[in-house]
Image (cartoon, rainbow, N blue to C red):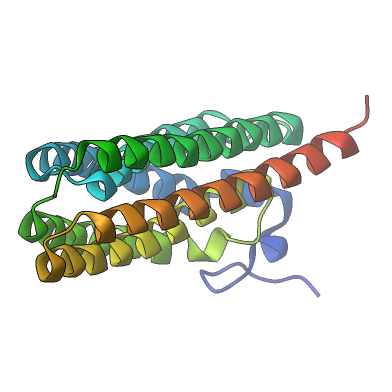
Length: 211
């Protein structure tokens, strides 16, 4: 029996037309604008506070904004192009994880201690934004690899913001950069894990496309 599609319907219920559904396009545009705004905010705050986790999160916001733009660019295209877009996004998520690891190593070597108040306040703002985006995209979490990559990005971002806030408390309580570095390591692990998942699914979809 067919399903009249409302917001609670799954992507499978919408069928192939889900990738061009107005709600999906609208959700991507909202996510794109919010992520660009938060990139600017966190970049400035991370530089001011000398926080690796905030700078890492700022880079993640920039990457997500680019990913949402890429998703908008391939809306309505054949599945092979959507899967290729997902592959690019998966690789960018993996590169982001490697960047965070390298940045954390540099800060550990330099001995810089971040400013916790800025970390906590900006982390809380970012959490509100990313939670809203995650809720907005939740309906589309079971679509193709391209859709799934967008959902994974928003989910990981919300978790990262919670971790940044915990790091701010840790830095405040200990006067050490270690909480910030530990959170940066967790963020890197999340990015690497999600990146590998998306790359694997995208490659599986591409392999299934007739030559």
